Length: 216
Image 1 (cartoon, one colour):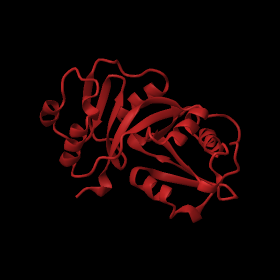
Image 2: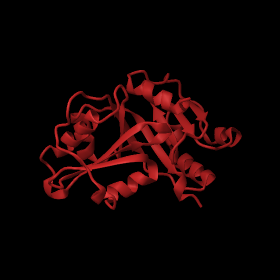
Image 3: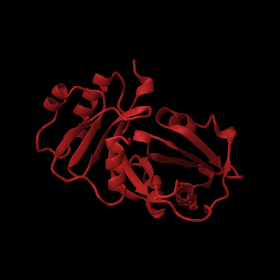
């Protein structure tokens, strides 16, 4: 059975977000290496092992941003015995047919790349790919609640040439049939935001992850 948070995210990716009623729903801990706070328009979800009796007094009723306030995120981190990740924009796109626009190869040589090291904190079943000219790194894996996620990086010497858009598009060609590909990006990372938007990814919400592997 799929985790209820995955169902919510899949619905949002398909253009059916939760009702905007300023509510915050508490869900069981999701499968995978992280708990999370995931927010949509005036509706948020806390998927973590926390007591509802402790959670509710920390949330201001009727506040659409209650679950993303810094003081709440810090409190939740303390309850979980870990640290809060950054507040990311959540985007999604559905698969594309045919071969990707870049030649990509599975690469064991990229296992020590910082992008891969970060992915290991939050994802399982990783696929790591690169191009023959070592310009890009593409990481695919199962992340929050079992969703399919993408992360990518373009070598600094090759930026500004459309490779970000190309690699983000390539990920859509490698997505499982009928299953959306999710991407998380800091809103301040304008280059990646633009690349994802140009590749057809659509903003669906925001999220903060709490990695379990870094708990005290």
